[in-house]
Amino acid sequence: MDEDYARDAIEYCIRLGASYADLRIERKEIKEISLEDGIITSNASMIDMLGIRVLLNGVWGFYAIENPKKEDYKLAGERACRLAKAYSEDAKEKVKLAYTKAHNDKVYFDTRIKPEDNIDELLKIAKECYAIMRVNTQKSSISIGYQRVSKLFMNSESANIVQEYTDTTAVLTSVASEQGLNESTSTTEGGRGGIEMLENVRTKAEYISSMASKLVKAKPVKESKSKVILNPDFVALLTHEILGHPSEADRVLGYELAWAGGAWWAGKLGSRIGSSLLSVIDDPTIPSTLGNYKYDDEGVIAREKILIKDGILVDHMYSRETALKFDKEPNASMRASDAKFMPLIRMACTYIKPRDYSYQEMIKEVKDGYLVCDMKVPSIDMFRYNWSISAQYAYKIEQGELKDLHRDVIIMNNALDFFNSIDACSKEFEIRPILNCGKGDPMQIMRMGNGGPYIRGEAIIKSVQ
Image (cartoon, rainbow, N blue to C red; front, side, top):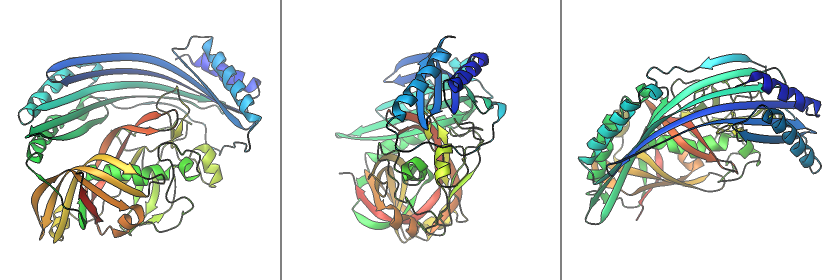
């Protein structure tokens, strides 16, 4: 990363008429090992990316180049300025940015067991997990690997920030078959760090393969409106889709509508949207989660953001541009999947706050209901208000005890009814790794954390079939 070229490019953009310019350089090294049906495959890549964003005549311009050479820095700046000038002729509204302090910092996130130096250990873990899963199931797969990322951010306000981190993750899937019925279970493990992030992956391999083998013998559920307890893995997806995405201010304002891009609580700041037990936080500062960072891609320093407090919607996630529209301070919510893309407002680590109940107490108080476990596939409307999310399995609860196991489960409700029905949240709590959150057009895939406690409410439960 040549900071001199970067600084010269930013100054060049200002001379060309830009009122603001920022530049991101990113080097990403990726290594992945996959094991499926006994066959091992691997792939690796390394790429350098340069992206320059300018504000000229009140309009954004952006240009990116892969594997940039010396001359590409100013070229990218010139083309970004040219695009902004062209678009400014038809602009109905001029972009303005909220103030933020310019930071100069170097941040290196802790990696105890470096995966790039221990490829044999990654392969060993993959083989051991595969062997564990094949004991109970007919088909299993594991994809394990790491990403090493080094990022430089500079802007025309004198910010100069370097951040370096490693993500180490594993995705495991088991499929059991019996009499023409196939049931799959899966889990994603890992976090921001080294191989130490995978210390429980063998236990999870045994768990999901055991569950898959049980599910082929389980029965579907009968449709009913029931008391449901959702486990932290299922809550992670619910939080992501129905609480996290609608909190992104570009969706609230209607700027970003691709891929169910609306927000069901647009215009409802200060309104009650759930029971007093519902508090939602987005926090990039939680160590080891995939949403952990010190500065976002606008150079804003990260902090905890309280989005919902005791059932009241109190805040959103902002960029510098959208913060000004809400008369708020920027809160470090802008990220791009890499420097090839303009940053968007994205979740970091969004979760429902734990409370005082124990998981066992929550079960004991239910006379007739279900324990719903582990995320599968979401289906949501344009404003993320009406939702259905499939689960990997559920247990019937009768008179405070877990009974029959059920497969092919879907939970359905609308946001207001469900969040207002919450009557208990556990003190047990977990943040789950999310590898594939999509947003934007062109699509950007982002990593983050989501989670929460066990939560209890009311919803419609039914079978996929």
